[in-house]
Length: 186
Image (cartoon, rainbow, N blue to C red; front, top):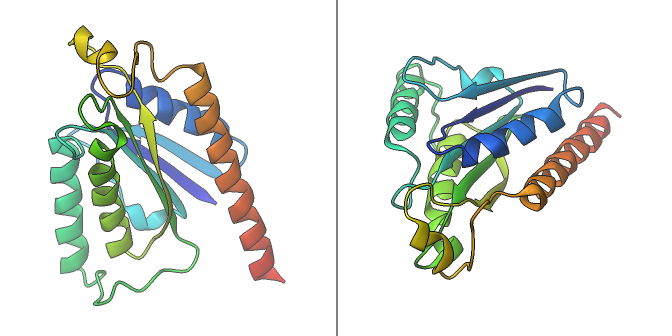
């Protein structure tokens, strides 16, 4: 299974999560690429069997540069005839959308629109999106936002427990897909 982790990170929270996913996937899948988003990347998503897309939540959405890139990829795939009406699922193509968020005002509900946005992209290109992961991360500028929001004290997040949860979720995805693919061969 060829896997991709494409993420953007501003303060390092999302990078920690992406790195843990990568470390967990190494050796568990045939090939895994970890790419931190830059304006110079060029990724053909359709080359991968398992994609993890992640970003920090910025005003309920991914980073602007990630959104711009994904919109351009969608236009490109559409121009190539790869976006088909009703977006049929491609066999053996799976995705996970993840984010880090601080949610000082309404908690996790601030993060859900972001992963739904990424999910919509993957579904448009035919991927079965297995899950959306919302991981708490601290603010790196406003310390009051780290201690007075609905989530309580989020200083130091994502912490070791958060990253172990990500590792276990990743192992679960790999195990489930291995079982599914073994069932397809019988």
